[in-house]
Amino acid sequence: MNEAKRIIFSVKALIFNGGKFLALHKKSNYRMPVFLWDLPGGTMEFGEAPQETIVREIVEETSLNVSNLILYDTWIHKKDEMTQLAGVIYLCQTGDTEVMLSNEHDRFIWLTLDAPDVNSVHPAFRTAIAKLRDERRKL
Image 1 (spheres, rainbow, N blue to C red):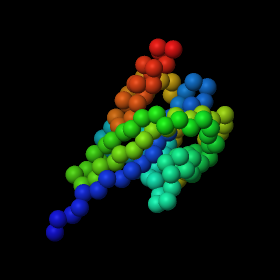
Image 2: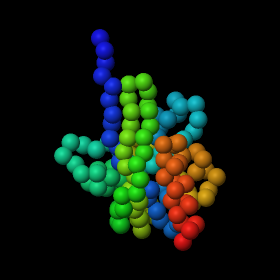
Image 3: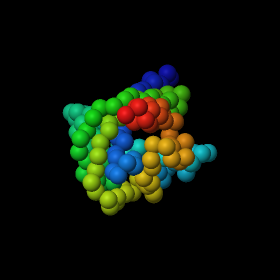
Image 4: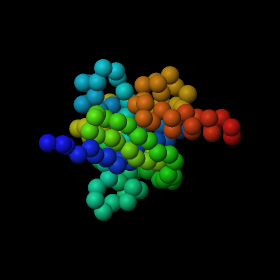
């Protein structure tokens, strides 16, 4: 039997507060050989627009309210031989300071674009972070 390969569309966010962005750690990532930070977000549900998905996912994962959503970049990651993840990254802001994590995550960190820990963000999102860092330096 030949299993079908699949592409999953997912929406992620760089949520900024005070010059730093939020990164999360998934509990399930303890199985990975390297510690990686993830960005808030998730899979789009049928009938949702990407903007609706990211707002819903941010509330579900962090309880944060966000504003100033800007579609920023795309990303792609080959999860395994049969599954590819692809999606978009939004930039947004929050004035909230209290993060309440869902059961899906076990910790969070606020990072500057220049922080050494940016190298521990999942490789699928590092290009967008580097691009944003370079654009901000030009300002």
